[in-house]
Amino acid sequence: MYIDAHTHPNIYAYKRFGISQKDLINDIEKTGIISIANSLDIASYRKNRILQSKCAYIFASFGIHPWKAPKYTAKLGKIEALIEKNELIGEIGLDRFFVSDRENYEAQVRIFSFFLSRCREKLISVHTKGAEREALEMLKRSGNSRVLIHWYSGDRDTLKEMISRDYYFTVGPEILVSEKIRSIAKTIPENRLLTETDNPGGPESIYGRTFMPDLVKRVVRVLAKIRSADRDELKNRIFNNFIEASADLSLCRKIKFLSPGKY
Ligand SMILES: [Zn+2]
Image 1 (cartoon, rainbow, N blue to C red):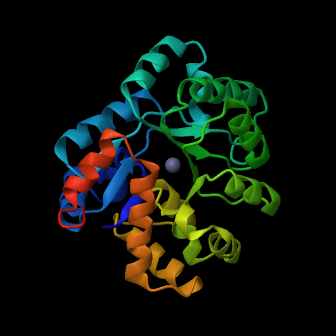
Image 2 (cartoon, protein in one colour):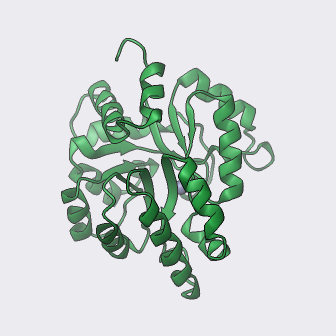
């Protein structure tokens, strides 16, 4: 089974992308790609919950994206209630690359640290763009150990330290075009490697068009090539990595149920 450990199915819309949510669900049902539906805010989380109720392969994750942090600093009670209800958390983190307004940074830190202090046992998907070192320092202070670093593109030293702390890394479609991402992906130990698409917005920002979830198959193909690995073996390895990362969560039992014969 393929794992798309970081995607945003709620953002697909026929008007914007020519792909309706119904088309998307049919496609995920057909391909059987485990899809971790990350949220940017409470509204997108609610949409992802609806998608989860319609498709066995979609698992909603609750988070407040750093871009949305300023809107939520006065709503911590609401956030706390939703954190309690969820074992999957994301997308959370810091962004100093796409966000140039420094006034937002304080809100980002407040929201991220609020999540970290309440999510020590949860599986968290972390955005670190342009703030890799600061995000790592916050992760270290909070003691979260079940961490998925999303689309890492930062410096080598921070990467090495994240690897030494046994974080997982979700590698996505930029690997198809970027030497830097390929080089990072080669460095990640095999037992910490995961895959993602960040659909539909992530690939759109690179390629100017939208893709279906099977984009994750192309990611695995390139990963296998650059690591000189067998594609099916690597696919299975990535699947097992996700099982290990999510072990003891109810999500893990559900995924095992979806892959009969394997467990
Ligand atoms: Zn994302």
